[in-house]
Length: 326
Image: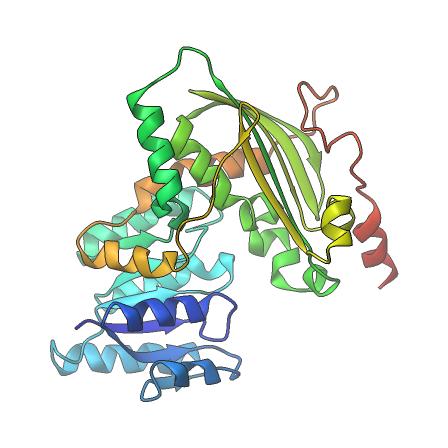
């Protein structure tokens, strides 16, 4: 049985980590969050110590480390806002624990180099939660692609629209310096998946750059990709809005939908994979972080070549005007 500590216990994704720790037969000994709405801990680890101050949490982990090997924390799970991942991974390594961090591992690629140096210094590992790589249907697709390579690049069309209300603009998620923007915050999962499946990116072009949505194209080693990401409800297909749905996800390859189903507790599988001696680390996370950083630093192309079909109809003024009026 391994000892876990969790940073960001009140966040949206934290319950999946708590469940994964529980379902893999381990225990959560400490958690921290500046917000104290963390009653969800009772469902799994009511005996866990809880802190609202990171300094006291840090001190407690250090105390456990010095007590005995049985008391020391083996893993620190990081579920905090994107811009804090780097700092909280460092905290975990300082107490000689391995780190399991949500995506993106960092916002700025150069921070990966520092984390690699700290891994060597402390003798610990940082793992990134790249759960889509463990989805059975996508593992099967990768096997097929690897075993039957085509001379012609695949045509990929990615569309992901998920409604976010006005709160989004005033939260850390709406601040690019904290979230990394739409491409990093909601797109990093898909960019990592595309690079994993179809190889490195040779070039990319940006067609929409807005606080609520982004779109562009990429030329990968084995695929040409058109992508569109949005948190604007008005971008949802009419049939979704009429059905009362708040999200739409589609990825097609040569006109055929790629299957995203087949497993419901992917975080538990991520934890089991790491505890078995596997897991995805810094080098695995690096390509997608580099790509999204490059996209964020790009200017919008004057002429959109082979643009995503939504680019021609998307609105880019809806939420920006609301924010000005707030």
